[in-house]
Image (cartoon, rainbow, N blue to C red):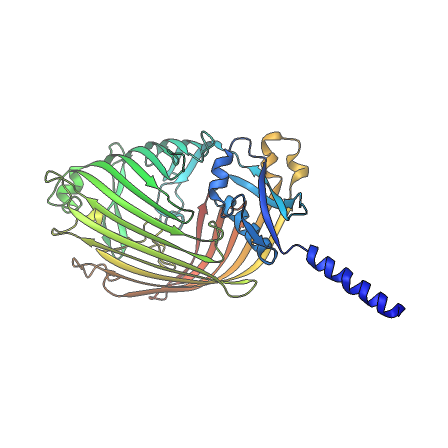
Length: 470
């Protein structure tokens, strides 16, 4: 009898405990800490959860980590921590979000190379310090606390440039409509006026500008959800070229020996972005589409339509092994022959192919496939508080997050041009490069990529790439 009573009591106790064990968390409120500048509405706009949502306990940790990364993706914070507090008997909780804001105002001194790529400057131009720029960049990445960047650039040296831009992402209460404006003025005393043996050939006048240009634009953005965004832009551009190029070196730089190129342009950009961590994604995808029309009126010197698209897929194959796959393509439609300065394909800006950093490939249309297998070597936060605690402006840098990955890379590309020239034999054929690298990410936004790559002609070399989210 006593055994039966004990058994019954134990069964009832376990049943009561099971009934009182929470199976989900209901969000009562958000508590933000550390956002001295950033508006709370801007932060809640980026979250996938809201007050009143019910989150199963089995998914709580995953959901909180997803939203921590979303706040890091705003590039407004060095650190983000999310915790659950004040768990009540009715399963309601408070989500506490602790933030360490970055420096938002950067008066950044400029000392940079003028060439299109560090590797070109180091190897082809023999790291000539005369091919550098200097000046100052004034950047406020969170001007009113609404994630609205304001910037100005004053740059002298090899390629002087003066520019300013401002973007206000939230004009309405729903935070879906934004606007932007910008202007740019530049001068060059040396330019790559043609391509020979798949390399740029330069012309320089030490005491006179070879190329000057001016551009201005306005834009409207629409972001209906967390993952999608639309942007429409309208602008005007004008460039003036020295007659030494238009007459004697490349009569088709602006076409038909022209020394001026004036045109209005319009563009539409669409992005669908669900990457988990934008500075160095480990899962998710990104899709970009751009449709641009250069030449809106009969009096414009350019008349062409370009369409480009890019798909980036990120897959976590195991805890430490990642796969990045990028497919990018562009086509240019025109009833006329394209000016030389509108034929850029591979080797300019972000459109580089590993193993071809020292080359350029011009064309009307191109396609690129890039693959990288990445194995994580280091994922650690280094405590720097003993060095920064004495200096209040450095309080946001008390922790140094560092991630290192070993990468195995393989790229393919094809560039088509109807203006094929035998002196540039990388056009109209398959290009491929492969190699290994070491990726180092610091402060959740500064990425160095040290790579050794080979191309299809067997030429190999060591190359450095740098990207910054600041």
